[in-house]
Image 1 (cartoon, rainbow over the protein chains, first blue to last red):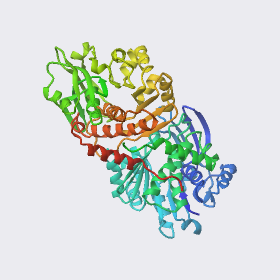
Image 2: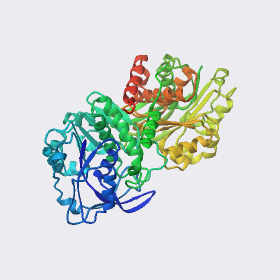
Image 3: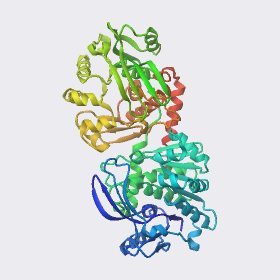
Image 4: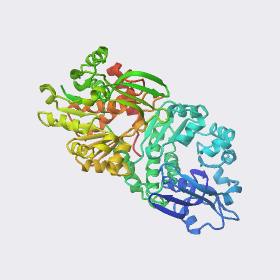
Length: 304
Length: 304
């Protein structure tokens, strides 16, 4: 197993300008692992309830995802309900039912604990730290995501975690909230001064900007004709980003740049349909074609 | 003269989070012509009042700008007052005093009327049309900018104008308002179906996206540590964009792509200080260095 991901598995109720779904498979670990599965072997650590559909587990497995760490607990699967009606970039949470996720205590088997790439998706930073500390040795690369809630209520644990990771992936507003900086490069610099070597600042339909210690890289979003459901775009980005890095087993500047475009590629698929509908049914040539569309979207000649 | 620009010359009162200026030289034609002057010879058509500072005319002339079409009328120069306090991307207009600009009737001298490149900055589309119709022959390239006001009160004239230009440069919100389309590629397609071969959709701190009939190109904004005053960013973009095209005298896809990065380069300078303070004092090597920073900001390797 090249990448281990710990995060949420959920059933989501989502409404967007394109329509409504009552209960679709979601959760950060779902989007991440399916996205990364096109590049490398992924193991998923999470918790589900007795109501979890066996077809959903089968879908993970059809992507070669190791679900031995996806534990069934007594109760119902985590449920999130949200809408993107006024602003396609920002989810308004209508309801959150933690259910079995409320008592989630991630446990790592031997094979999980030696994964060389680790993604700590957006969950309580205390749990993210617990997983990181349970690794047998320090992975080659650790990245994490987080959200405003943890900045508000668990900042010390979050800061401890960030001091230990290689890359923080974070939304633009949350990067500003975390650092108290107004300008993107200042926020990125402040994050890097907390520990990471790089940070990916996610900007919704405007793409993402990758900052390293001495470079920055602007990955645009693909100008899609139709955004159906933005849920999971960030985790799909992270899956493509880390999946690509794990597949080439390199994390230098050049690899991070290409990985950001792979991330944008996967995010662009994720939003093209509800939930995992598009991203779970890609072919290698879909991905190559979209990546090449990013090459075309960004290439220009030098000054003459 | 390679480019003729018609637009406003103004004294602006501006407040931004970085500070306040009571009366600084501004106006679309000022930003455009100074920006374009680094690439080619520009002629400026506009009107000023008796209060216009001769040092400001001298500044234009020090950039080789032909000011023979900058007419002095009895009265005061156009004044605009605005602030960018809540959102650095959006000016809130506090006051507009048209003054001599209210009776502005652009007149073209012989030399002006044969310019091969024409930029119709954001003024009443009836005046933009008048200038276009006064050209001796159809210029090689005509571009224009506009704003929500003209979409609201002068849409037929604006549509007639747009049907006759090669490139419309327009803010994202205004592109959506003009076309009634929600998604950027749909808005761009609708604009191109109105007549232009290409459109540049400006997205403030998120850069600009260029759309042609069969390509799109994402030009990021430069991740500046400090944005002092966004006034004139769009017109400075337009000046770099058209100035570069006029200097190489080509308007094909490849040239448009590079021109969009030159535009972003000039816009990035414009916002680094109040008014024209930064953009009026650039060197060729400042521009080359910033352009190369855009190369670094956007380059990535293919998939391996």
